[in-house]
Length: 392
Image 1: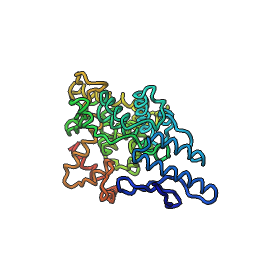
Image 2 (image 1 turned 135 degrees about the horizontal axis):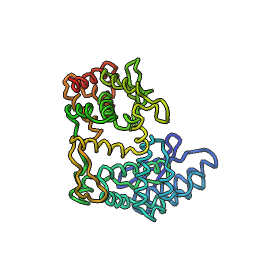
Image 3 (image 1 turned 90 degrees about the vertical axis):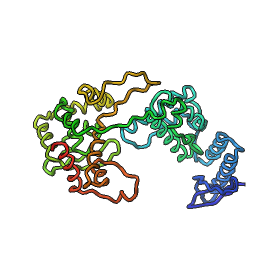
Image 4 (image 1 turned 90 degrees about the horizontal axis):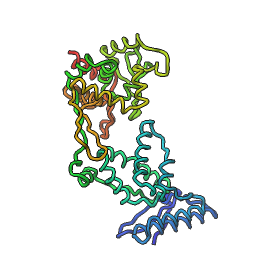
């Protein structure tokens, strides 16, 4: 029979499953007096239900009903929300772009559920999630399905933290195998981006129409910064006197300070002399692109891809019909500039991977690399090497 222990002022359920002792926080505070006795009663009932659920003697839905009923008696929880209600009201802090992606993922999941989106959140099962993954893989790429899974799993995990669910229904799924099971051709449908060659970069900088020629140069000389960060680059980010460009990346909210190398300084100084200080977009280095990007990021990216095709840098679009709503994805895009920066820098034996990472702005999962701090001279050395490779 399940027991209770108190740790750091909180009740923990203790029970055995297959000879293994399990301790699980109930997130119910141990108090004194009448309130404490009532809290202990609820904790014991909850611990018993958790044990029965773990042994398969009670369904999760029934356990949640009983736990919530007991919790309401001490004011610990409210009613179980529907799937649509919970996902609609899910509002953890995130960047604007992350929030937009998350809402899109939620809409797709709710579309899949149809009328079932009104069911209780705790009625979603692992099989529901597996069916959703299989359904999505019929329609979009494996990478997009991975984005769906990540965001929906995050919402379920938050529901567990908030004591709404006992456990997340999102199972671990190998998307490669799942995609192959849906359609053998989809097991490796993820595109691998290729870097631009030095010759291609030179061509784009010298032959592409404005503002693309200047944006390619800006991205390259700032360490391969992404399309959105270049489109939304502001004059206030550029310190001509100090010789620096300071910006905060959209994707990771990382603060980056890059040396302003001569090639980029010359380009920006020329643009600054012709800047339009008025209007809503007057503060942007590339005002027309900023306006377009804010309205439709995808359209800006598609325009760049069309420019690459028009100049023969990538082949004409693949018109082969794709399964579901898949579209042909080019092997080179604006993001390939980032690949080029890393590739060219890594080919320089004098530059370490940590030095390159500091300039590009990549995060590292490896602990020892977290101790590497790049100063101005290190970044300047990397960017000088890139500048020499491009203009030598």
